[in-house]
Image 1 (cartoon, rainbow, N blue to C red):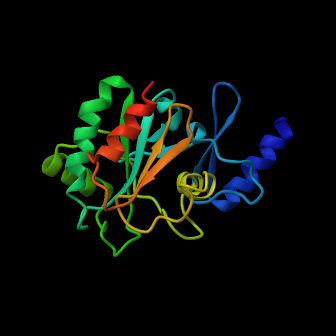
Image 2 (cartoon, rainbow, N blue to C red):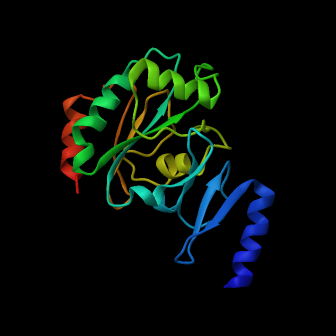
Image 3 (cartoon, rainbow, N blue to C red):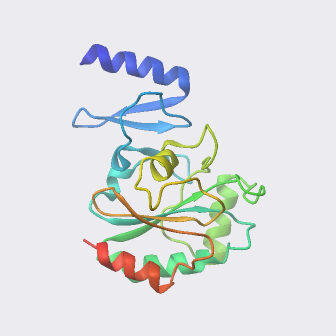
Length: 200
């Protein structure tokens, strides 16, 4: 097993993927790409960079309902930050959170640095839910998180992200159970009903 993990780490380093060993001995993965032939991605084993550049394990959110959203500061849908924060405030004490992942993939609408994004979110929308470093959500080099969300999910939610503020609902077990497009506002009844149905 040790030899396998060593080989895995070497191969991962060559591809720009980080392998983080958890306390249980299981490997957590993060980075810009996933190795070909790798087993299915486990949402709760992913490690992401937060908005301050620190590693944050998504295992922290195991047992919670999560709404994963690709965000942008200069988009026609940017005002949805307000609704996302309202969702976090409404359901936060019931085992729910929003995770924001800025991306510059669509129209170059997130050109700023992470600190600029953080300041914008806090000052303009009083965002308190977790925000992460910018990620690729489309193309061959999309982040493993978005490989999981768009490729390793059921037919109803599978498929590429088409624009900013696409919302993926993940249940407490780390399974994607629903998806909402940019046009669907965070406080839409379809979103709130889906969240309420999976609260722990």
